[in-house]
Image (cartoon, rainbow, N blue to C red; front, side, top):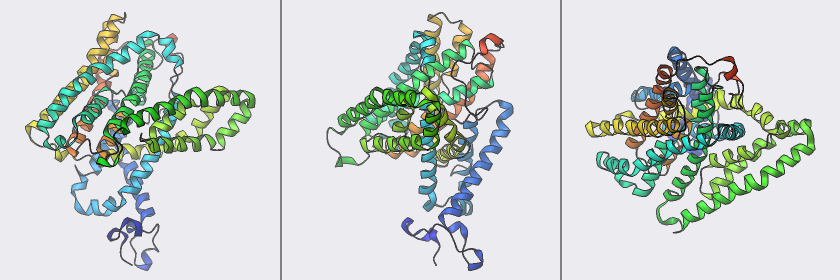
Length: 457
């Protein structure tokens, strides 16, 4: 039999008949996927241990691990690339990592507690808006410069490029921020409470921006879509969110109260809630918005009454955070080719993108936080914290690349930016905020991390 790697994807067999039959297991889908996952986990966990003294979040190790395994480093070695990450295997690895991403966004929706936003008051909303507006306003100018410095980016329409660039510059990684605050002992302190509340609001804005980016970019299919497709996508997405939050959530809350905690726990344990999250993802994909949007909104709609949200999260979190989600970060790194960033113009854009992303977030957040009465040092620490990137950033970038809005060079530039701003967040915050929180400031505020020190994203 011919090796699976020389066949079309449809002809790839699941498993081999073994080496004693003269077959190479790495020419077959399942054993190769198992080896790929093992290699990714080994490399990323090794990097996480190496970076632990620097107090870096795990996402940094996972993205760096993917870059190390990809075309920027080990992927240059032809034998390694053809053996461990052949082109025909990309679909399976991307599908597994995408499923992990979908389930993780469901968990983020489950654990996003807007009661913390209400406790933090208007300051959290003002800080979130101040961290979004300046970078987003800078996006058109940055997109115009990108089209000059990176000729390949000129093939994308200007409006979708602006929206994707603005979304990428504006987002804050809520899970990464939680990990940094937890590492510094600030998760329950006043600074941490304000930061987490503002990041929660920022997450909602980020998903709205992503939905807008998906709508204006179309399906990447050129003229096959209807002229009013962006309007239909936005209207359908808004109707989906309204149905989930205004109709489904109250209904589920009533059912949970009537059923009691035991029945709610049984429902969560049965997998029905996870199945609904998967169906919600399929529904938003049909609308024209990414499946993770549906899973996230469904997670928001699951009520906390009767322990339904908590039990559902407990069933999914270990597998997703420990196995599937690291694959998503690693595959993002595998798709990043630093070699495409060539010449003074491209590296100048890297510096400019990092500066706009960091200073836009920092400046807006610092100004509003100080204006609302926060001490300058804490306001500066908050500005640094809100500049951390991570999961949502990579989602925006990967979707932009799938939609042909971001070319390989632009994608690599923004991945470098995400890594740089996240790496800088912990040492800058440590330098700015050295006071040790007292016992009274470490009370739970509803934003504690599930799963101990996992810090998945």
